[in-house]
Image (tube, rainbow, N blue to C red; front, side, top):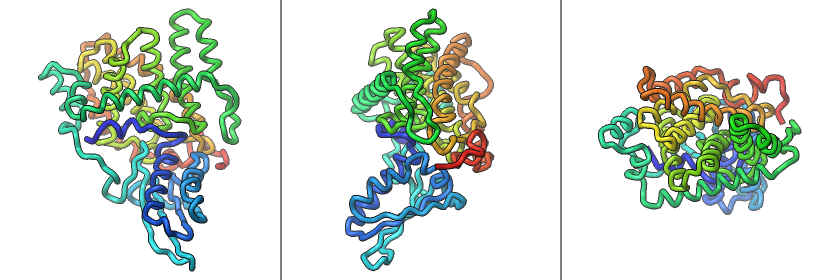
Length: 401
């Protein structure tokens, strides 16, 4: 497995696969062809189907258009074999002749790949690629998951996670202070600030749950409006992990260092799924985004409350298992309905997974690795209309932007 930095990418919403990835691809192609007189970009499959709602065209145009005219061609019914999020860049000379052509895929979490290989791939840092192997290592050595991260990553990982935590906190605090309507045709009002205010008026149990909702809504609403967030593991699921960790730090007074260790463990969980399955909604549905985020947050919460390695693994397993089969069906191609509510609900579910696992000794029948395997197969079995194309599920019968 590669560095957990690839799970936690700092950038701007609303989508890691549809916005961050295409923007990076545009930058790379522009670096190759600064002399081009014009560009043509063809978007395929899921990338084309919900690209307007995800601001894919805006990301591409903002990058290329200052240098030369850009034509975008939308082909939502054409799915390239390697991945649903395909795009082809063409550079042209002053006579309109194509001088170069490059097909690239946005594979989730802001990462790019050519067919068969990931671009700018960092070196393999982790010798163990499954939760079972790492759990056995923890039980054999007496160490925890975050210590395995520390052993595999470079010495700067804690500084990076510190920056990640700062950006996560800032997104929550900005989101709690914002009001008004989110961009797009749904005219969806922001809810984080009102949830936060209402939660303050309840007794402890309802107050706690309301605050977790508010924190998750705050980050997700910032993402939906193009704000600065951290993928965890994607933009569409970026509210879950910050909400859980922010709430626990404020309510239980956990130190920043303990929060960073929890982030390391959460990143390791996300990394295992990325390595062995997918975190792309276009490839496996929302189970690979919000489901994985819930597993990450469940593991982080369990660690903070002193869970054993087996209990942490169990919490992560429940967080993902109970999202199996979740479709990616964004209404009008926007990262708003049902994405924002799903972040809030998954944050609460992560806290419940921690409580449930804490009542056990960590022993259970279905391993986290088995659930990852099932998630991958389930995602491949889902029809394309349920995988970020905006054609099925909750998105059905809504016009695309």
